[in-house]
Length: 550
Image (cartoon, rainbow, N blue to C red; front, side, top):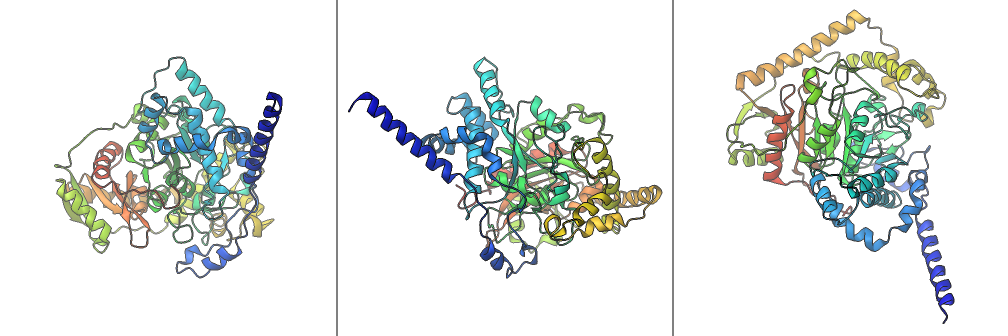
């Protein structure tokens, strides 16, 4: 056989392989009839989903800019680098790259391929990713180029590391939608924290799905649902457990290793809830530690961005990469200009940890308390004093009316037609079955609010002062370092008191549902949370990869 004939045959085989790969990578909406019928009988009413996949988006558009690169990655190479990436920390990823075992381009392409792989699998799709950055691979190649030219990369750095942003965080090149159809054309500029991430060399991989309007939209919505992203599913039990809200996609994506790290946001529980629900680490910083400029808001009093990661060290490193003083965010004190968290060894011997009597019947909580006690920590029995939380929903509603209008008029793209909560209500009512299938009761509530500025200020002061007095008195009376809670329990009082919190995987119930131990500390004590969190994580190593997502 001549060389020309051999070459022709080989080219033909390559064409067939590429054709098969292209055919196998085309997404078609799955028939979800049987799954929805099964969910209708779920014992938990919050799992009675009306739909799973968005009726408005075509997932093929996510990976279309990367088709050639994806099809050119040999399966052998994909499988070789997989154990170098899955469940690995930022430090481990940087070490593998430093040892020339993989490149930043391969790392980024791996996550894009894994996102496509899961999206095409009817038994494993999660709807955790709502968009991909078409410039992600270009940015990764630039990172490789800088390294090749001699740039020194610290292992405790996000340089070249792919990050998924919750889709209420502005990032050029992708719409910032908050999951809502009204914002589907919101091609806005980078949020301040996105600018900081890029300055640190991080790769903006894409956007994570979320509970629409950060879960302040409708009373009957399941957590993790948005019109543009569909229903986010939990990799630890897609039709068994909820994802938590509102940073549902960030939690599910990092749990299933669809990115190295993810960014969420919280007003009251929206980092702690999805992190604990997906066996991840979630850091809810003190409001004012990280900028909120360019993030679709609920409440300028309580909102904050924060990391969702697979380990405590990554949470600290991601926080550091986002930190910086933003003069446009009036919540930021000057202390945050150079606020950085350290990874250090701190003994638990002198730490006083508040134990809540309300959790005496939670076996995982009690067993982890024993581990902390054995490590030398002092456990102090406590209970949170009662405080009047009446009007919390009205506070959030009134602030969203004000703050969303400010965002829409100052940050939204000119193609976005809505400029207020009232116009969002009208827009959704043009096709409620498609735009708001679970209703929009909280939007309706906000439109009907009549609080004036003075009444809002009085309500805010009462709620914040009550929460602060309750937690301050508890910490002072018992001389506590941190308070130990479960999942997103006590997130509301922590938010109102502006106490930061860190949730860390502490194990799984018999059903397989993940649970997190949540540490709560006084304002701007993030370093204390990281110190204790690192020790707890080292003692327990509780997190495990969800079955089927190896």
